[in-house]
Length: 342
Image (tube, rainbow, N blue to C red):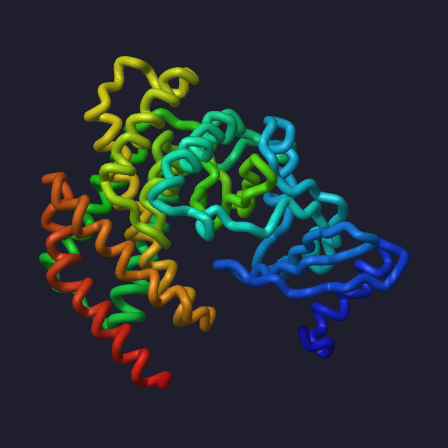
């Protein structure tokens, strides 16, 4: 890290004051926001500090949810100190080995069952010391879906919708929103996948939970099982889906009157909503934030939409359109961008 970076200088000074000594600080990474992370080594121990510009990424939600998750029994970073003026958060280091990096067909079912077993705990957290979690309501869902239109279609592809396409999108988004609201409502992590789970000895640590809300019971499960960054075959995913179905019934998060076919439709359509949103977010990260790596993740999100959406009449037309019209344009755009950068 270049020491002329004013925020890094301020961060170093704050840490030196906290520890009463000079500490070694190394950049780990940024995430899909304006936040970046550093690892600190001091007297044989490791710590993590996040740098979140307070006008862009408030730190209060992370701090409050970290406390609530810890109290509920989850392995999460413990907040040691905060600098509210700059948005620095010093926290314990819960590991650096992402679950994604160790997954293979032989172990994924075991690891994913362990990850699913944490979801009833997450579901139980519906408020923090600052009050109830925000509702993942119709307005929230529609704001997320609009990112697809604004950033993937308009900004990334420069695509102009016809009146018929606009009507089709509106109908699809309404159906997806109704699906969210039809489900039992629980505490939701909202970004629960294999990059946000760290292997800590024999346990799984949970990170990146600051956007937790109160919403659909299938959201976190489909986020994990139909990951935006890796796709597993149906013969792995389907038994895990059924495992989660029974899990939420056993923990009284969903009535046992709900059939598996109803649950599966909730799950599938919830995944479609998440992947539509993710495709838009990845395009926004590429264009607005110059995070070029996310461009390569767009095709998988759209392939999920194309493949799974075909099974449901209320969104089949949209899924076919994504498959035949949008996905080929995305692939061509990726090739063009690669050539221009060469």
